Length: 390
Image 1: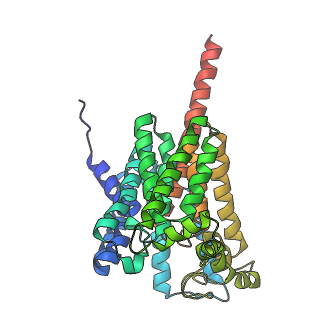
Image 2: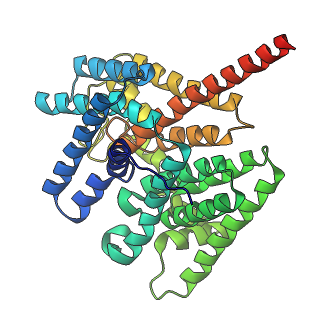
Image 3: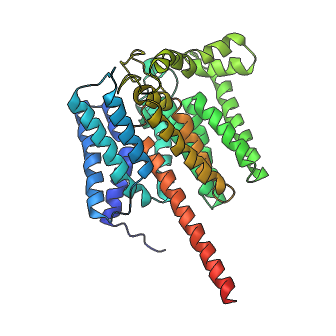
């Protein structure tokens, strides 16, 4: 059996991926210590800088650099700025650009298999929460693993499920998909369920055989609904889903209560008041103009805080991801699935500029699409050269 050599550079890369893709500083803050969490957070940035300095620089992600520059600059110049302390703002900016610039080199050297492994570990952390750090008073029967928020946990699961379509071995692909489906359902995230159904419907375009995966997921969900009926204290989210499926109008109302649509409505007026230049950095975050909860939508946050220009750049970037991934869909369907998943989660989350695993995901998708384009171009040139020789 051939040995697998792991170099010090690999260990450095895996340490960075573990800290950021598994959200280690975040879960340490929630369960253990804010001091230790801060140390791990700064360690991750330090390791990123070391990796960047030790490896050959191969480029930058111009899109995310431009989006960051326009967002931070214009949101800080707004006349109605809700700016934090200047030093906090500077640190926030520095962290973003370290992730985007240094993380580019990390993600460019991260394979499909390596990313799949870390996403699988992240998804399985949901089981760890169930058995070791579940708090029924605050978790409300929903699970998120290392990612604290069930929607974030659901995103990791749908991202891993999307990436599983790149696995060539059908047996391994099936195992991976079962893990991501089961763990995703345990988050009881509406976003996960909707995206999972959408991805499976699109996957039928690749092969009709993919239709059976819808049945597997529905059987798992049915099993949870049945199990819930025998619990002395029923899981409220499962009860809502069960009632919704059975046609209970009250359950449908409860399931929709506190939805993101209701949250966004609190911010529409402020957006209309300043659509060109925005309301200033932090205005649409927690503690800003709409209250402590924040807008929970990265698109509205960019527009509402920095104005129309960064918002359009933000949309264009994701438009590029969708266009490039759609062009190679039949051979590499995972790129389109991952792009759709990232775009969807950003409609329910306003922390794009600070959550490392979201930024790493955007970097990986974009750089992988570029590499795929280069490989296809090289292949076409070789075919053309062979034809000319003949």
